Length: 234
Image (cartoon, rainbow, N blue to C red; front, side, top):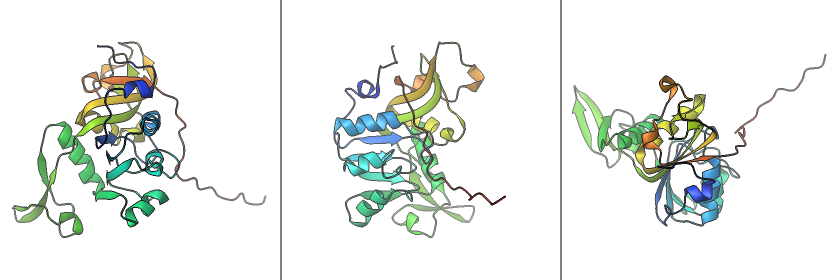
């Protein structure tokens, strides 16, 4: 099975439809599949539900799809860096299913593992628990959360071999590996594709069995917030 595609547009061919659900990896602007996001924007597909820790910034990452009104709903944990997200949400143009960060990660992991639901103490007694099943274990109250899956998962890795075995770097491992297991089709964009056998098997984070399509991308590696100190006079 040939997994390597020439570009993001080609890798998405035949997979897109209006109203689909997409998982998009990354943490802040670290490890986001920026080439695939741009190709989604250019495709014109709309009414999307995105499962992503955050929504990028105004002019980058998922912020591109917010500007073009292609996202209908976000299932997220942190959305504090995007003014357009704030505007659309407060005006009722955008749906939001808000999750504690650990709960979001576990919902994705559970979905990828075929687990339909689980119980957690996180959110008990808050608005997060409203409308959810409550159950007691050993005298403690827990709420049930459901596993998450998607029509496609788009992830960003550091290296891949020709069979789609993936290696991530540092913070990029936060959501990408679990999302790679939870999509019906997973597309990975990477910085480098190496020959089969080049990767140390003990260093592979996502086995290629989870990855159906693969591209080599060019990446900006932006910094979300840059804080500098003024230089003191000598």
